Length: 311
Image (cartoon, rainbow, N blue to C red):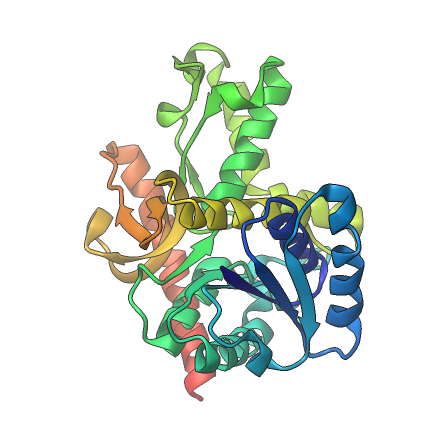
């Protein structure tokens, strides 16, 4: 298994380290346009392998040709958010960056699975799909896993219970219009609505939607990377080990939930066949209305991105 991580910044480097720690690949290639950065970081990581006990080999490069015949490509390159910026504010520059990176990687690894992490995530996943021309089982994005992890973390903080006992789902675009589903959220099988009053749960949902922005305000010069990296690696693990996990990912819809040619977060089954199935939940009227708001927003942003790319 050969995995390429595009972007040697905080997210990309953390992804590479976790892939090696969990031995999810024989070889990990960290590629970046900055000379010396991917080489230095990858060497540092590789020198930690004897301590960790992993035999994964890690290489840094500025040349996409070195990534030839990768099984999985993870796109993390792009500008990070700064305080006051929304994910959509990154649209103009990141659309060009993601388009170029994916095109370069696809040239040498046309049979790879492509996992997108760059923001605005749903839009960049759509861009990657159009650039490669691959089907949705080969190109998908990390979004709902991160959003759900934040949601579960806040519920754990509130109730003082184990993380592993909390199950949750989030639909829609990765951002302020995401659609948490309290009705599908449980703690050891108990509906969360039985454990947390609606008013308090609404506050947790609001904090989840603004979770990335909260971290940006603290960091001031960067954005979250530990949790996004862990989310991307969970997707890789489900594919590499054919776990068939049901995970919320950004996927191209083909009629599911009433939408076509649109990428948003939905429950997906990930296995050795990549994105093997999109799970369609039965939503009530309120949930459908929230999803429509989210999908309309993503649709508008996708249109803007494609106009920028096509000139």
